[in-house]
Every structure is written in C-alpha cells, then in structure tokens.
Length: 124
Ligand SMILES: [Zn+2]
Image 1 (spheres, protein in one colour):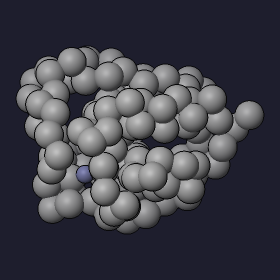
Image 2 (cartoon, rainbow, N blue to C red):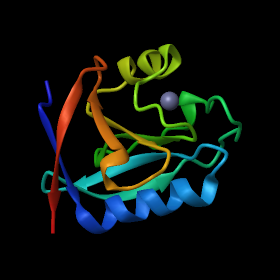
Image 3 (cartoon, rainbow, N blue to C red):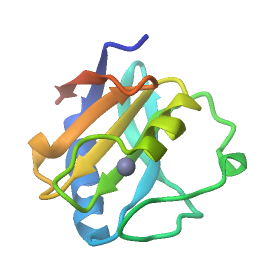
C-alpha cells in the first residue's frame, strides 16, 4: 500500500493551473511517473465536464505501465473523495490526487486506492 507520493513541484503547479482553467468544471487526468516520481499528466480524452462529477469509460485507459494513478479537481472547497470517487479509486492501484478550490498548493490532497489520505512530497 502506498504511504506517500512524490511529485515534481512543476507538475503540481501545472495541475493547479489545469484546475483553475477548468473551473467551474472538473478536469480529470492520469498521472505518469518516472523513477518513482510523478512527472506527467495525461488529460483524459473523454470527460464529460460538469459541476458535480466526472465520468469516463475505464476501457479508454491507456495500457501503460508508467500510469500510477489519477488526478481530478473539485470546483468546491471539498478535499474529500465522493462515494463515486472512492469507487473509482478502488478500481486502480496507486495514488489519486484531488485538487480542490481555491487551487493553491495546500489544496492538493492525495489518497490511496482505499481512499485513505497519504502524504505528498514535492520534488524540486
Ligand atoms: Zn471527486
């Protein structure tokens, strides 16, 4: 079970920017890691933007070993995963980020696939 996620500082800032740009809708993407550090985001191609939730088809997931988890935004100041998020997290291993309003650095929380909060370590 993952206890901590290491993220490139630059990527975290980029995720915040994506969340701000998508506001008041959500954005959703997949996280890609190199050498144990999350460095890239793949924006999910088939999202249905909406103020409440994000849907996409799991069969569209890229078959890619470097995908280590997911990220999505909450346009409200709510860091907690919704029941739908928890269901989704449970379908994947790895880490799941929620970027929530007002989208500053402390508004990014990480969860494991069981929905427990885990630590974020920023890598310069
Ligand atoms: Zn959510």
